[in-house]
Amino acid sequence: MIYTLELENREIFPFLKKIIIFCALFGFLFAPAKEIHPYHVGSVEINYNTASKTFEISAKFFLDDLETVLNKKYGKNIHFSDEKYKSEINTELKNYFADYFKLKNNNKFLIVNYVGYEEDKESVLIYLESEATETPKKVETAVSLLYDLYNDQMNLVHIIVNGDRKSAKLNYPDRYLYQIF
Image (cartoon, rainbow, N blue to C red; front, side, top):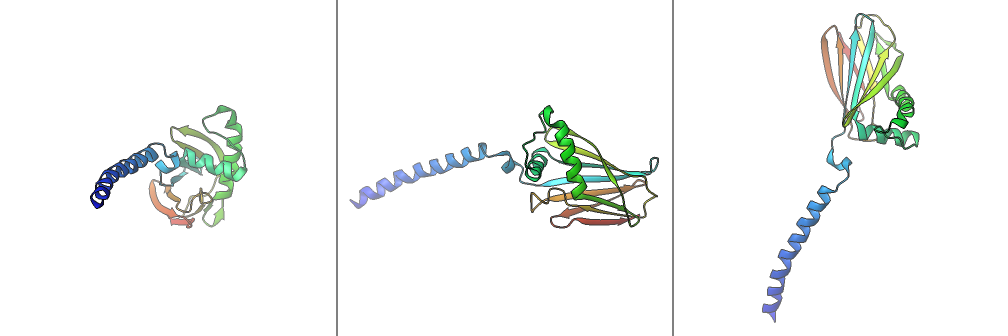
């Protein structure tokens, strides 16, 4: 009888291994998209244009992350890929960036205007422009974009003045950055 139990165990374990491997592969193949890009990274470039004397700002985020944060914050169900939501998306992006992006030049807060956005496959590019301002000596920014969605969000911030590029990485909850030019 003991011999029979050992034989049964030898037959059961290979079968259990196959089931575990199958479940793991099946789970990986059909995991939601959020599990496929586990990194929560965005980038913001703040470029001083000497001709217009304004800061031109572009921000890039994963489309699904931005869609999720806007839907969560404003309690709606918009989709970037659907043309019928374009006007609503513009309004929500304008309001979201007004809340989570601030810019100072030489110790003076600047008015930052929303310009628009465009989709780029799996990401969204958002464009902003500041009011006209004097040549920067000290640029300060507060960037907390997507911090209300992910506590591991990382925002790469690049500030460019007269071709001098200074970059920093802001990890949640860090949101303040200043650079001297």
